[in-house]
Image (cartoon, rainbow, N blue to C red):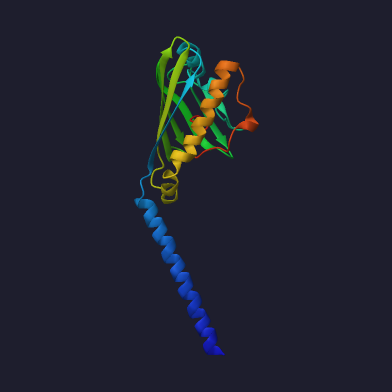
Length: 200
């Protein structure tokens, strides 16, 4: 009887040891995976760049076509241009900050996002090109880095789909806002991405 108990303890110890080795292996692999990611999406809006750009030029305007936190949200800096930003501390989005870093109206805009004290960083760029007098091609690119988090190393490999989907949804909302005057409905927004409300 005692021998079977000892065998049971040994088997349980072996199982726990194997599970621990698997977990350690996954963590090591997570550290080795690239933490950086890049996503790019484009759309054509039936409006000249001069009509599209005002919705990009200030942090407050982004709330009309990108998902935004419901709590701990505040705007800072100028209404438009370099330094215009918003920060938040929300259960779903976490803590973060979005700020416009450079702007060439109405052709180009750059921004940065820092989440959880800079543990996650995103650099974004939006480029507007005139297709003709009444059409604008908008290309939106984000480059992010999850830092030295082994679990997020796995997530970085999926950001092309995850964050890409968020960019697509926001571009659709922006198109509708510019062409039809309808802002984003909160219940139409997808779940928050790992990035930020400032970026998608």
